[in-house]
Amino acid sequence: MAEAILNFKGKALVTAYSAGSHPSGAVRPEALKRLEIAGIPTQNLRSKSWDEFAKPGAPAMDFIFTVCDHAAGEVCPVWPGTPMTAHWGVADPDAATGAEVERKIWQAYRELETRILLFTSLRIEELDRMSLKKRLDEIGKTRSSN
Image (cartoon, rainbow, N blue to C red; front, side, top):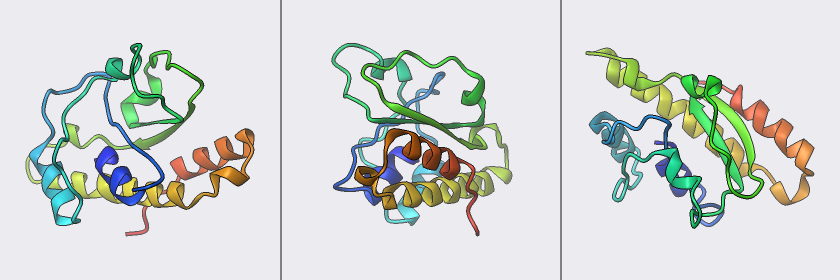
């Protein structure tokens, strides 16, 4: 969801990619439905491993945000270049079952959208690296107000 939201909300500013340490191999239909309800394009979304972005020839990354609560404790790959990293923990909807799935997907969507809107409103060119890192970490602690 983060990839789709950021590519939609940050149109000219960024190109976002989403990947995980243990991809399921498929994008959850409930996540696709939530994005479609919000009017966010879902074509070309796929489940990807983060290994894909640590290999030679991978797109250059300026920022890497881990979003799954489980990812905070994982050892991440060594990313090419010197991307700025931050953890924006979001409860993993994949852990939900039954009627709880839709609520967890909606909650994750709201948190991601809130943080992405804050991120895309930053005047990155006016911030030094340390100030920017501090702001990204603050955004990661932001919860949606809905």
